[in-house]
Amino acid sequence: MSSSSVDSVGVARLLPGGPVADRVLGEVAAEVVALRAAGVTPSLATVLVGDDDASVGYIRIKQRLASELGFVSPHVRLPASASQVDLHRVIEDFNADRGVHGVLVQHPVPGGLDYGRALQVLDPDKDVDGMHPVSLGRLALGLPGPVPCTPAGIEALLAFHGVSVAGREVVVLGRGATLGRPLAMLLAQKRATANAAVTVVHTGVADWPRFARRAEVLVAAAGVPGIVRPEHVRPGAVVVGGGVRYAGRRLLPDVDPSCARVAGAITPRVGGVGPTTVAMLFRNAVGAVRRAVGG
Image (cartoon, rainbow, N blue to C red; front, side, top):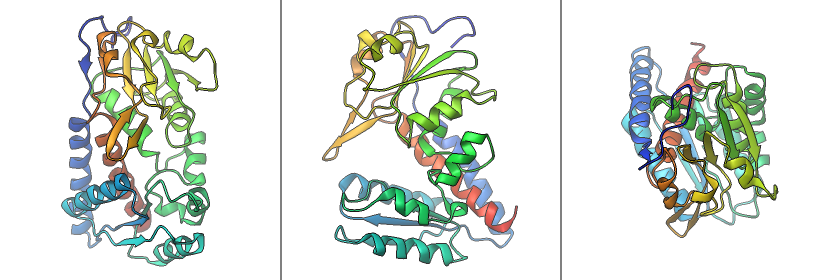
């Protein structure tokens, strides 16, 4: 996006996340090589509760990437019937294990469990999702620390594809703790790849389309399939689909594909924000290793 206007209207330019993820994971792989050369074996532990198909698939992807990048990846899978105490016990064991540098508790957890309480048990130095209250507090204060993966991935994706948000109007549709709120804080920070004028709206705002239509960059983060349609998009705007839901294994994005007729640039339905989210997880994992070894 130029400094003076949004992209011209026409067939939307695609903003794939794959090339962004490849670059980040290349940097992570180089870090792991250096750590191993220094005698440190990076470790990323994963915890899965239950049998949610999407979660099982995500854990499989993360464990495969961990192996490819040179991490060891201990894994604990608890049954859907596990108690809060069972989950806390697993997290506490990983907290106490000095050979484990980062811990990922796959979200969501079954309905009878409290993910927020589980996060509070986690050692914040081992947080790789950037979702621990300490991590979010550091983000709010502009201090170094792990950043929530999807917001960090969106910032990297926009920067990679030359979409400058500095001084531009960004509207985030959604206020969730994993995406909308941290993304707003991230893109408002004084930094070359941020420094935006950010407005957060949500489905509780009756006239949210009024805000969406003025956005130069519109980020859908509501988790409501198809909520963003062409009439909600400013002609030539950049549209980022961050929110999704699943029907079984079928991905249902917030952004209707027809928005590509109006947008100047848009993330693809599949292969947009998802790959960058996973890449940022491993960037955070390397950060956890560095914190542990003091480097």
